[in-house]
Image 1 (cartoon, rainbow, N blue to C red):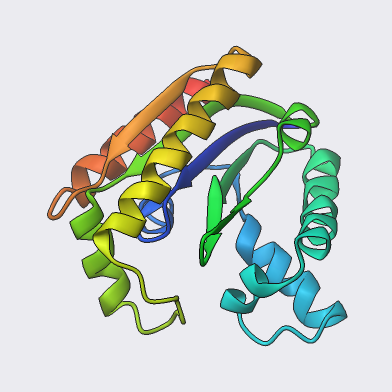
Image 2: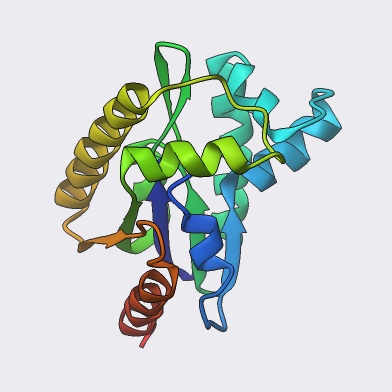
Length: 186
């Protein structure tokens, strides 16, 4: 099994934008994309946003298949996922502690941005079909996410990095991500 860095963030914080620009020789795995590939084939899901509307048990089964593939990988992996996915008032976890323990996670990275920046990005992202939320909803999810990811890092005994990706800071965020990837996989 290869080593893994897990990048998480509230949807709209920009983690995928950052990871698409990171210089690396490692496999980049987007959990949402992999789950969509399975769900579209096995459960007639037609877009990624439908994943969060699936029954929680079915989501967990699909995610389990993705983690099974990650465990089989021999190469180092950069994992792109969410700490939580919000569905109305309900938070669904993007992964469990047991799933993290089942792979060789070396580092957790939380990509963050202000609630205002996240809201603005979501409003301009026409590729997604998100529920209507306001800055208060986003702030609540950010708080849940940082609490959760901090607990995961503490239990696993691994470093936690926070990258701020506020407006006009993408280049700096990419540089920080490059540094973390290089340090983790050296």
